[in-house]
Length: 370
Image 1 (cartoon, one colour):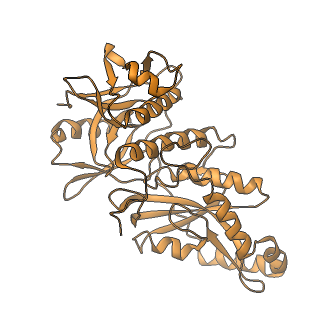
Image 2 (cartoon, helix red, strand yellow):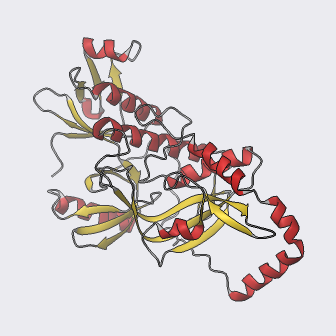
Image 3 (spheres, rainbow, N blue to C red):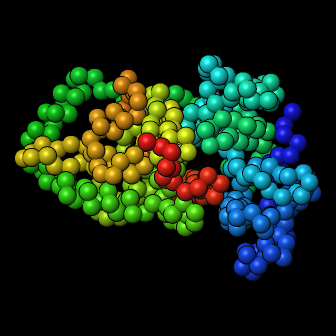
């Protein structure tokens, strides 16, 4: 059965309201009203409480749920996690239980058999996998699923997309298509070469993107949460493309699919596992009349890199690369986001994920990682 000291709630109301400095409110006694007439307390002696207030306020503004673990004797918050409101896409057996993929998530999630609620969670996930039901799925920093509950859409929720989703189509051009593309470019190579940027300009553009990285403990919008590499890459990539387009550049994107495993100092476990990933690319000049698509990915590198290098650090030599136009927000169904509304929602959600981790685990990079 679910942890009796855990609460999942979309209703987040502060009592009293946040109309004074947080430190003052904490000293006077600050409570949070949740669904089911539950009330929890923010402990003024807990150094994390002021950060919890910021995260809870951010989730309330997003109308997103929160997962809280409570000390039953004091009603104080002891742990805060941010659930996914999503649908399971697949469940594959693994040595520890199941590897679970979620809609609109490129992380690989795990349901472990040593989870005390494994027998309760597994059938709920399987039923949703068959029906397309949306769930509230909570996981820890290692992306182990700890809690799964049904989700009731609110009146403002968008309708669910069709179910089931089509597989991500790898774009592998046949030899004749590649030949025609080469022939088409041959007579206009000089024009094609001059429209690409120099290596120095590519580095300047990369540095401009990297400079938007979020401070982990405050995450002020419109920063980009590069220091939370676990998930949300499609939002980061789309925002970077927007910024590059505003700079007068013509970015594209490259998507990778595979059994991806990436070492990183920006996760307490020192690695992340992905099923796919995406980043912007720029056409960069290489000598006279030669060009190369370079990847701009501050979540992985300090500089632009070739697509081969980008693929090489992601741990799967058999992974498939798929290029796309910059306008493609999400490759499944060629979803676009011309107004950047969905992009901003994704960024806001993962900013809070970064802040939540930094509050409870300390800010990245993590010294225990090689």
